Amino acid sequence: MSTQSGAAVAAGGGMVRPVGIVTDIATVARRSVRSLLREPEAMAPALIIPTFFFIVNIGALESFVERSPGIDYRAFQIPVAIIFAVTGISRASVLVIDIQTGYLDRMLVTPVRRTTLLLGMMVADIVLALALSLVVVAMGFVAGVRFETGLLGILLFLGLAVAWSLAFTGFPYTVALRTGNPAAVNSSFLIFFPFAFLTPAYLPRELMTGWMQTVAAWNPVTYLLEGMRSLLSGGWQAAAIGKASAAIGGLALVTFVMAFRSLARRVATG
Amino acid sequence: MDGVDLGVNSGEIYGFLGPNGAGKSTTVRMLCTLLKPTAGQATVAGYDVVDRPGDVRIRIGVALQEAALDERQTGREILDLQARLYGLSAVDRAASIARAVDLADIGDAMDARIKTYSGGMRRRLDLAASLIHGPEVLFLDEPTTGLDPVSRAQVWDEVRRLNGELGVTVFLTTQYLEEADALADRVAIIDGGRIVEEGSPSELKRAVGADVIVVDLSPDAIAAAATVAETLPDVDAVTQGRRGVTIATADGAATVSSVAVALSGAGIHPQSLTVRTPSLDDVFLLATGYRMSAVDPAAGGGGAAPGSGSRAATPGSGGP
Image (cartoon, rainbow over all chains, first blue to last red; front, side, top):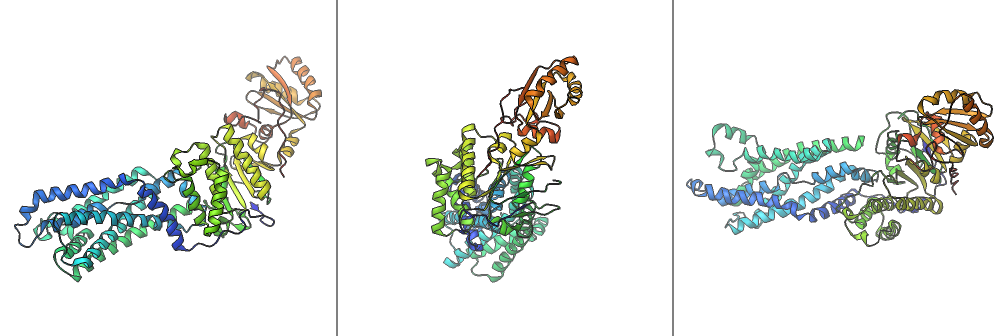
């Protein structure tokens, strides 16, 4: 098969220029953020669930837990609310529709860098995670929670939340790219439960049952919660922040390798 | 895919004609760098699709089947995104988008979400988007499938204009015989993953014979009628179909009477007997042994079914 280009007259006369990776990311991200802003209703569960649990957990457990000295249970619960808000959000549901409708193919016949199709969506994920985290932190302030580490601590706190959220997006993106099936993407939400609940979400680790303590010690969310809590009511603790960062980094390494491998496979076979 | 060997000349409209499942989309996906051929080689706009996909991508425009577009965006946003992916400067982008807006011709809907668009509007926007960067080669995968006649005519006009005025090479797949006949300078007929015929529509039709005689018969008489017809002088080829036989001949008017007499002598009474000039469906029938229009009810038009009338098929467009 061949088409000889020799005498071809390019209709556009050389308008096409090489595109840098940052521009590609910006282009894909522009579309993703725009569609995010057009469905604010999709943000509702991500805010209702953490708000609900925050109120219920405090109502049920605050006076009981605070019998142990040195625990501010509202501050203790704010990182939990953030984890509930930002874990599992992603644009994977859009990606899977792109695969099904063929819009992904429309993108793939352009010179766009393949990795930026995912990276651009992740920019929208960051925007959403940050917005949700800000709302939860504001809710904390309303409930009387204060950061012992001040403004810098708040920024680091938000940074950890967003980084965690992003690391977790690798799961739904992997499912979307491997299966191309919206139902499978929706089910990938289930992985949230062990990550969120096999942790010191309700009580500090030292108060938990033996087996649960063991499981929690292997759960990255445990270190994330403890790191975030240290910023609220422990002062600057390098070890806690370090472990939280390592937990996020470890998860991101695993999920990003899976997601970008799945992307490579998806775009290789069409 | 197996045994697809074709060459498309720069500046021509090449029609890839075949029924559903013949391998048309697979071929397009390979040429557009979406699918790696397991064997064989393909060059588009001078570049190998496997070794130099990036060079191919910036030179081609593609409108795939079903006009897949993101429903949450507006038409203008789709065009803008497309222009940015090809690295158009702000000035070029504005000009290209303005041109594409004209071309799509969907009025104020350009700034409405695509989910509100009709099928025809989506198709025109998709076509405009695929041209935003001024491609040398345009791939259209079944550009009019599912469109109403008015929208179909608009797409045809646009394809002719792009090819005629801008010199864009067009590779078009279709399951419509009349579409291939009306648009393509050259046609490849594909069936079961292979090319069974290739040439200009008029060449292909001439090869069938100057005329065809279509004999409509009851099913039990078909084989006998074919045997009778084959013995007649001036009959070039006889093909059995499900509803009768098709006879290719140099002079239909002269031969039809001897066909009628011979059949009558053999005790066979046709339901109808018509003479017409060959259609691409006759080419298809001769090459594959079955009629495309019989398999695929959607493919009517120029490839008239046997007995549907004596209207002559329109000759090929010839192109610029």
